[in-house]
Amino acid sequence: MSASGQRPALGILLILLMAACFASMDSSIRYLGGFLPVLIILWARYSFQALTMAVWLGLQSLRGRTGQFRAAHPRFQLARGLLLLATSAMSFYGVQYMPVAEFTAINMLTPVLVTLLAALLLHERVSRLRWALVIGGFAGALIVIRPGSGLFGWAVLFPLAGALTYASFQILTAKLAALESPYTTHFYTGLTGALLLSVLLALLPLDLIGTLRAASAGQLGLLALIGLLGTLGHLLLILALGMAPTGTLMPFVYVQIGVAAFIGWLAFDHVPDSVAWLGMAVVSACGAASAWLNVRRAQREAASPVALDTIAD
Image (tube, rainbow, N blue to C red; front, side, top):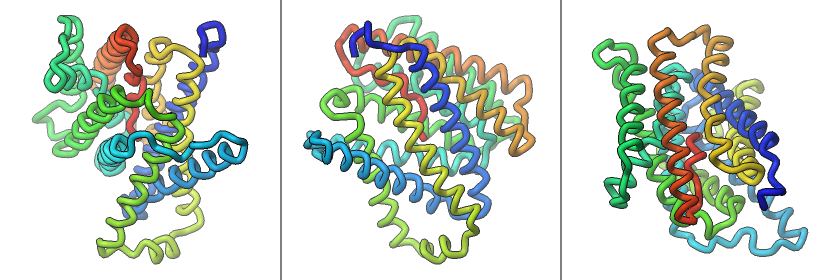
C-alpha cells in the first residue's frame, strides 16, 4: 500500500484489538487448562486456524484468485510452522504456572533476542545502543522473575524458551516472508501444527474424542473461542501491517501486557506487585525500542520488517 493510501489510526486500532485477542486467549487457556488437557487445547487452536484459513483461501480461489494454496517454499513453511508450534506450546503450558501478565512481559523479550541471535548466528553488526537494549531487556526480565525469591521457580523457563524459539521464528520469517502470501503462510502454519498435534495425540494415551464428549458445552465453547481468538489475532496483525508503517504500530503491541493484567485481575483476582510492574515497564521499553531499531534496519536493507510480531500465540 502506498503511503498516501495508509490509514495509521485504523492500523493502531487493529493492533489494540489484536492485543485484546491474545491477552483474552491466554487467560482463557489458563482457565480451561484446569479442566481439559493442555495438549488438546493446543490442538484445537491450530485446527481452528487451519480450517478457518482453508475456507478463507477457498473463497478467494472461487473469486478467481488462483494459487492461494500453493506454497512457493514448502520447507520454509514447515520450519516456520514447527518454530511457532514450539513457541505456542511454551505459552499454553507456561500460563498454567505463571500469571498471564508476568508471563506475557517475559515472553516479549523477543525483539531483544532477535538482536542477540542476529549478532551470534548471522554475524550482523550491532550498535552499542542495541546492545544496551539487550542488557536492559534481560535486566527487566530479572526484575520480574526475581531469581532466588521462589516466586515463579522453574516455570520461568517457559516464557524464556518461548521468546527464544519465537526470535528464531522471526529471523527465518524475515528472510523469506516476502516470497509468500501472508494468508497462505497463515494457513500452512495452522496446518503444520494441526497435523503434528494430531499425530502426537494418536500416539499418546489421550482420548481426544472421549475428552471432547465429556466436556461441558461451556468448555467446548471456550475451546472454540481460543481457536477464534488466536486466528483472528494474527489476521488483525496482517491487516494492520497494510494500514500503517511497522514503526508506527510497534509501541502499541505492548498494550497486551496491560490488557493481560486487567483480565488477570477480573478473572483470577491477581494484580502484579510494584516490582513486577517496574520489570514489565523495563521489558516493554527495551523491547519496543529494539523492535523499532530492527524495523529501521530491515527497511534500510529492503527486507521484510517482521519485528512487530512479538506475540507468539
